[in-house]
Length: 244
Image: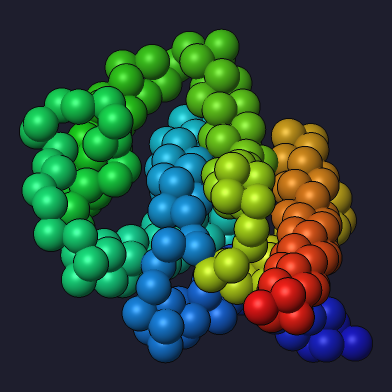
């Protein structure tokens, strides 16, 4: 019996470490197939990378399960892969130069070279590491760091939610990715509760589940709206043809 319990525990830990990367496989394949990255918000990569950098720094000051530390490392690597694909795909259509050192806010996280994104994340990591090293013995700093990490992660889906709302469309976004988000967030929330992780982790998971559901509702609402618009245009075209 103990063997099966150990096997189940190991399986759940592996799922936690690598499961977060799975939702991005459908989106990655869709971008590769369509040669179009406009439907995916790269700010998702920014939010998730920042959240996991902060989580690693939080782990340094207040140790928690190694599973969550390894998950953060895997997720940062996954976001870099997604960013590289998106930047390369967009460069085929837009050859304008937008660099990190131009220091223009409107270009933030919309640079034209992958190296700029890497440098930005490295800069955040170095500054965060320096601050954590200096303030690691200050309990208030660690609590704020942990809160910022979890709150940032909880906002993971909001860039995609905002992008869909702004364009009134979910075209180019992988529904499979969002479904995987929902299942993964549900699993990890249960994992946090069962493993008695700090309560902030469970709250983060619940917020993420709510955002995932809102994005799936957008798929339904905007698809219905697109269908109604298509039918209306078709009727108008038929009337125009009849009068002609």
